[in-house]
Length: 389
Picture (tube, rainbow, N blue to C red):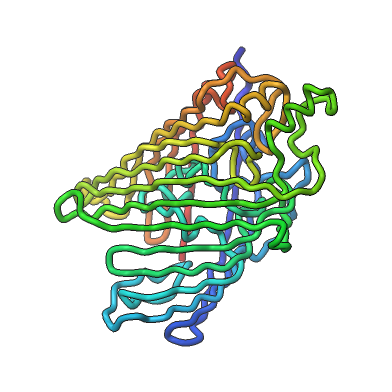
């Protein structure tokens, strides 16, 4: 059966501001206005097709008013006199930094601002759009519905390596807008090691190793299934439990390797234990991503970018059984499941029209959306206009 086509439009405006208190201390504050909804209200697929979708939570519409997205106090402690170039931008004002340094951040931010970054696949404004291409889908990173959390972070940077750690607040309910401030009951630890080195001669690649542990009021798929089979609930209900603290953990690998001045490879692998409910990001327990990145200087358009990516997402056996018996997650569940891995191919081209004006075309092909072989495939074209000043 062929279903009718759908369309959706999103709009995001962000005002980035920053103020240098000293040469090593700065405050960053961003105000954001986001509107519009995703295809199918951004549910029914794990690799949601637009990272900028404004979602609803359990049928509750989010406020349409502008909101404070980030408020960060950033402190740099120099450990060497040698300086390295810094990139002045939304996450920092410095144009140079000590080669060896410690950095502290505290406030409101997006964990994906600092962890699991990839120069070829992390920017939904100029690169790929899919959630599981721009981020590691198996990293259920602490965030409210809009993607932000409150937390503190420490980072050590050296010439060829870095290590960072963040403690952050979890949402009170799965994908909820309100964060739980009780650290004894709910919190998230995130750690990442980053290594730079030349596997290809004269072309430094990057390897990032990520680990995380979430504590929160998360349900357990096996318990929800057992309660349903014992007829304690009419369907498997992952949230049908008293207030509790459970632990979910996982790991990720992130690589990028330029091959020349205009072409490079990148990829991610991610895994989490899959016994506890997907709670903050998306419903993925295993993911594998491969991609290629092109820079337009090869064809005389040095500010243009293009990329191709393939990602395969999966879920644990308990997660599969929960959905097959009629259970619902915050993104998935249609009363049945003929399981198959969700696979996504995505390609984009971003053209620099004039100064800070960029126009993009994006195309995605999704097999087994929501891990269901009875659904799809789905083809999603997209157009994007990005303005920056």
